[in-house]
Amino acid sequence: MDKKYAAENLLNELSSYHGAVIRQMKQMVELYIKLAELETKKEIPIKRSLCQDILSIRQLERVPVVTSTFPIDHSCQYHVGSFAHFKGLADSVTFVSKMLMSSVVTNIVNLLSK
Image (cartoon, rainbow, N blue to C red; front, side, top):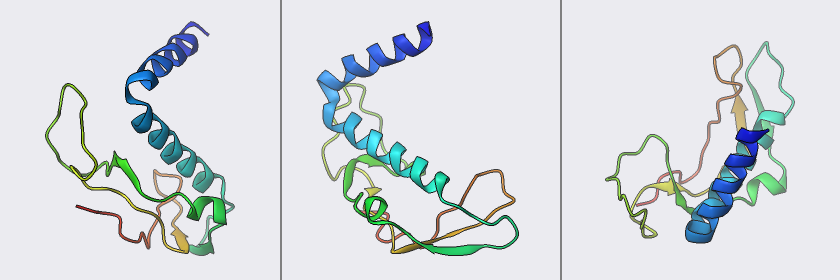
C-alpha cells in the first residue's frame, strides 16, 4: 500500500502543475481499459462497433502518440500542436487475438495531427 499511496501523492502533486496533461493521460488510460474490456472471440478477428463513451474521447492534444519522436523538454512545457497526438477512433475497431497484446486497434481515424 505504501507504493500506491506514494504514486497517488505524486500524481496529485504533478496534477497541480500539469493538470491538463494528467487529465488527458487519464482519459487515454480509461480508453485502453474500455477497449480491453470489450468481448472478443479468440478464434477470428472481429469487427465491432464502439459505444458512444469510447467514441467521445477525442482531441487529446497533450497526449503524444507513443511511437512518435519529439525533443524532450525537461521543464515539461509542451505546447499544443508541438507533437503528433491522438485525435480519435473510427466507428469500429478490429480485434486480433493470439498476440502478446490483448487487442490491436485498427481503423484509427486521424491518429496523427501535426
